[in-house]
Image 1: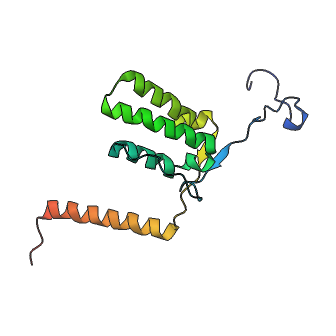
Image 2 (image 1 turned 180 degrees about the horizontal axis):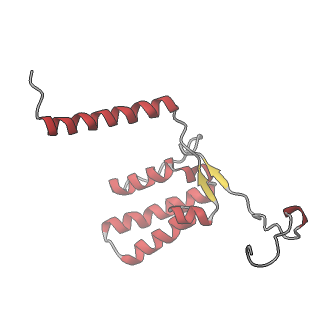
Image 3 (image 1 turned 60 degrees about the vertical axis):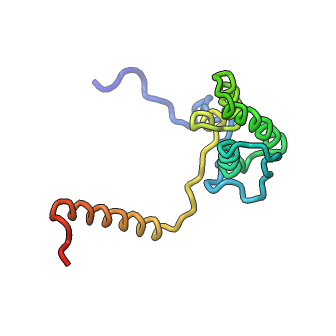
Length: 150
């Protein structure tokens, strides 16, 4: 006797198909292809500037509207305060705001965002991998056989 219960209906005869009501947005792997705003002001720590530049070049930035950039500029002030005097309350607020902008993989899944594969020629990827593999093989052989005599 096989399986339990009746055979499933043909999919064309089902009333509910449980289709995904919201489409997934595919973000460009290389970030926005249009100019993005600079961080206003000059009083920022290098770590805050690096944080902002990471966001500015991120795939998520391709979807940002002026209100999102405004939020990021306001958030930079909190990041700066955190670097000056680290407090868990500041970090919690930064994390919460970053989540609304798609900061982690889980946040992007919740927002139904995926990141496209980077546009890199296949031959170039293969060459760099094979070069890395041969370099590693040479190092292993050098360790096992000893240094090359010349």
